[in-house]
Length: 147
Image (cartoon, rainbow, N blue to C red; front, side):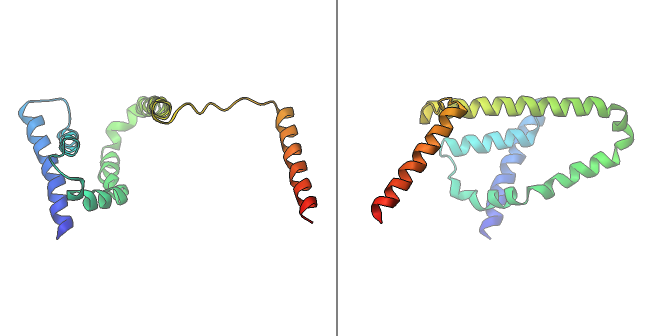
């Protein structure tokens, strides 16, 4: 019963987002607006995480099945889409590259800001080989002393 109530909360936010999006004629999909509202409610402690935790985890774990309607829609409208597949592919690949780049920079910024700079000193292959040999020699010396 608990998970049904949590799903009702999540879908309620999505429904409210749809009402706002349609009522104000916004170019943002209502479901996205609803998730932003849910995020804000969680951030400002209007809603506690425990109230949507299990249902959210369930939806994330079963996310692949939620892509089925989109796939069926593509197959149903393939005769309209097929003329533009090159443009669609370019848009998808461009968006993917931009997302990877932006997320990489964001993660890099967060790591430096909150954890410090993890710049690895550049060592030559010769220096790495010497370090390995020295470490191996130290291990041999310790083994001989212990015997």
